[in-house]
Amino acid sequence: MRQPRPAFGRDEQGFLARVAVGSHLAGKPHLRTLDYTSAEAMPPLGPAVDLLGDGSLWAIATPGHTPGHTSYLVNGARPTLLVGDASHFAWAFEHDAAPRGWTSADGARAARSLAQLRRFAALYPQVRVVFGHELRTN
Image 1 (tube, rainbow, N blue to C red):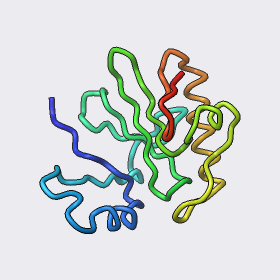
Image 2 (cartoon, helix red, strand yellow):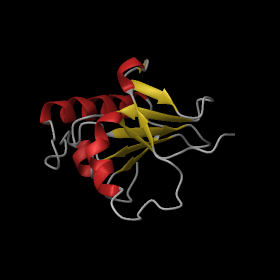
Image 3 (cartoon, one colour):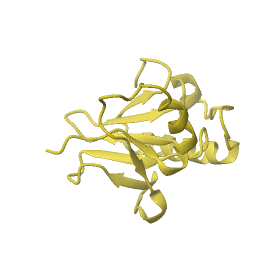
């Protein structure tokens, strides 16, 4: 099995430039940017990239909180959806409250991304959902 490299949406390059200042990434694997423009949709989530080519780890475009925000679906013994900052907390996810603010946040895109993630969670309740800023999961 290939070793995954950290992956970010293509539109996160401004963020990556700030993260890479200094030696934060010295000795770390190279970062990989993802271009979702030609990625196939994974209904109901939207554009997704199979990072390892075996269906075990998917990067999903969930823009809004930041322009290139990415969530991840891990197909393991217990499938897990890592929503990242598309939803900071379980309460916000459960109450359809998209995150606000940060770099060039787009509230409408954030709401669409959150709606897609919530729809997926409703269709697949066996998938654990992990939120961006709390340890609580469903």
